[in-house]
Amino acid sequence: MKAIIWPVYIDSKKTKHEGRKISIEHAVSSPKIREISKAAEKLGLNPEVDKNKSYSRSWWEISGRVTVDKTMPKKEILIKISNMIKGTRSK
Image (cartoon, rainbow, N blue to C red; front, side):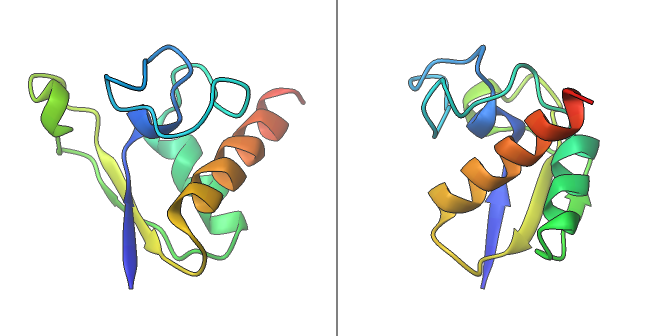
């Protein structure tokens, strides 16, 4: 089974209404597709990147998305990816 991860899901600059799926304290500021993909790879989630896709609530922005293996609940995947990005940014 696969899970789709849009950058907006873990973006601390977005509201829940705009599509953020995790709490602000877990979210990261303006995550990039590359960062999400690298974090998913480190977690062994077999990421696949679609660069030319647009999230439906902001269809005018081409943000891209990452498809990963769903080995745990989606919210857990999002938090782990977000924490991994925080860890790489703080270095």
